[in-house]
Image (cartoon, rainbow, N blue to C red; front, side, top):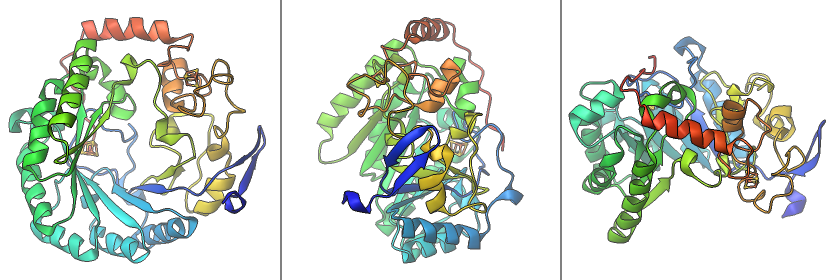
Amino acid sequence: MSSAIPSISHSAAPVVRVPPPMAMLAELTHRCPLACPYCSNPVGLTPGDEELSTEEWIGVFSQAADLGVLHLHLSGGEPAARRDLVELTRAAVSLGLYTNLITSGVGLTEARINDLAGAGLDHVQLSIQGVSPEGADRIAGYRGGYERKMAVANWVAATGIPLTVNAVCHRQNMGEIDGMIELAIRLGARRIEVATVQFHGWAERNKAALLPTREQVERATRTVAAAREKYQGVLVVDYVPADYYSKYPKACMGGWGRVGLNVTPSGRVLPCHAAETIPSLTFQTVREGTLSEIWYESDAFNAYRGDAWMPEPCRSCERKHIDFGGCRCQAMALAGDARATDPVCIRSPLRERLTRETNQLSATPSATLHYRGR
Ligand code: SF4
Ligand code: SF4
């Protein structure tokens, strides 16, 4: 009911009414044994000794539940790197949160998965990097990772916890989408998310090696469409298409500060994982304010709510409540201005330049992968 939706005010914008967040992504740690060159963690990783304690995380989960969050994504880095993962999961479940573990699988044992099941974990998302051990381990920068993932998928299946497979696709594995979909079925997954790499964090550094060609992207789209038909009722195939070859941008995060929030390992609260790339914004931590204060009242969360902040052509565009002007972090990265129309949009004055640069880069790829730090 609209009367239950608090109003927030912002110095530069009129009052915008927002509902509570539906989902929270808890980046429990940035530590990870893998070194994926497309990792969405920031290039400046949070060291382990700056992470929130067990008690602090449970306090954040409790605030989230009170605020109205329904879905809690336990992520990282590799969340299994936290020794208290089972304890955190149990606490979140007891607060009534739906818990989804987003994992590379490395660091999970059969016993630990059984403990997570016992704690009430609702869902597992397991990443894969390719269909062959050699290829997948090369991309992940971790020998033996593929075999471990296969074992983890079997252990998860044995508990009955529903499994989704996450496959980040890019120039070096885009020809394997068919195989990854078949692999997901063999692993007993109910869903696969085929997500084309987005150029934030470490992926930005690896753009020349990861940017797919237009032909690859078109083939991927056809492959996904065929798989959806072929495996209807067996596997749900979600697809995140390539930004740089799209006509319009995505509704990034369902709109800035509209649907969900991220909490970093040190407790900084962000509207999305890449938001710290916008230098004009200051983000508070859970040690500085409550989740409710940050969600409803902070300048950073209010900066791009509503449409008063939008420049033209977004301001008078009929799609502004569909894509919200695209991704603010992508606008920052490509236009140098977080308020700009996302340069992916065909109505952006920068679209032609982006197309030229994309064609040039995809025609002169680099084979070198710069791996994520550990
Ligand atoms: S993308 Fe790769 S390196 Fe980054 S957290 Fe996930 S598994 Fe680790
Ligand atoms: S002009 Fe703005 S609102 Fe319209 S489609 Fe492009 S990005 Fe979306």
